[in-house]
Length: 463
Image 1 (spheres, rainbow, N blue to C red):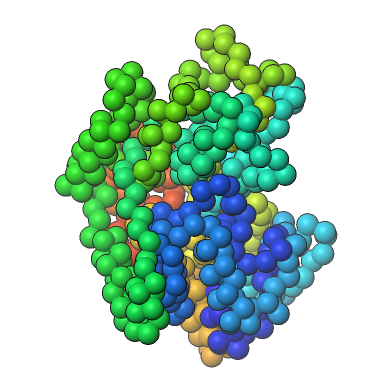
Image 2 (cartoon, one colour):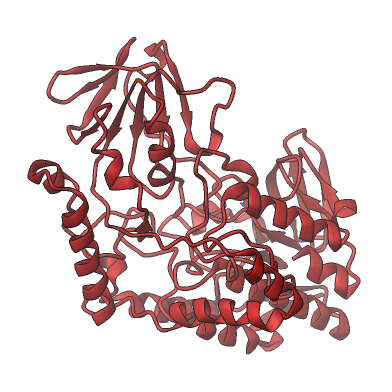
């Protein structure tokens, strides 16, 4: 977004609570952190990286790439680091946004773009007695690197996308590791191949070769069918079931690890290390629900006390609660969290009626069907275009029409029916009322094409 604004000559400021660029790839430093989208596709189309080390890059490599791109485009001068935005408030009388940071400072802006994503607020379950536990606890996104887990008795709560990466990494050196599983997950083999020096040299000398690798990943996502009864869904479920059967021979353990829903209902996961971890003598899979913390560990519903030195929350994020870290007030003092009480909605995941000149990147219903970088590029280009068109037309503020917004979101929810995201599982895609608020039910190119067709006449103009 910064690159688009700079290229258009806009005056802008980037606030970030961290000490630099990188977002989730700066925050999540847990052992084994990596992307599950191929590296060449999980990167900017205008800043290809010929030196990706392997199919799925790890966190340090992705962070270094993002920092390099930000530096090359001179974004450092626009960054206000260590500055967490807490409130956005639209001022009707001056038609500007008041942006307040955690230190109490308030600044005025003509437009605001939120780029906090949907994986920014850790989901830490409220387990009774947590304050009594004498050991340490931390969420996977806030990994405690001050002390190793080697030689410790460790509990990992949750079996999602983060846990599947850090659990195998810490298992070898822990005195004992207990993985608390509420719901089993489907896991497929991860085909993570290194790029040879010859391939990297070729990508550097001939960018079209890198684009071919990128395009192959793009086509794979574009051809996906997320209907619950699609051939793809059945095929992936059968493959995951066969993989589980091959890797876990103990029938009791295999039964505990077997989901009752199709692949895709929860976030699809890939790993060659997950199942072998449970064959280790120092690793236990615990499926009995947790009742409470004790001073020495966790007590499960069967009355057994499990003693631990460290408890790790691999419990994900409040993904369905968009902009949870911000207090946003629009026209007439209306509050976004109230408007989104029944589930977040936005027109093409980017603009919301009642909140003029507010744009959300990675907003509601923009997830799941392609590389999020592809979606974000389209959104950034859209925001730049709309701001440019506003300037050219002498329009100070725009507010997306309610009928345009509602018709779009009605269509999105109709299209959700029959998808794998609404099958028989609990997932972070859905609001508490069951509404899918994170996923886009069509292809990535469909989203990009729809966004490119948006015109200013779909907005009410102000000023």
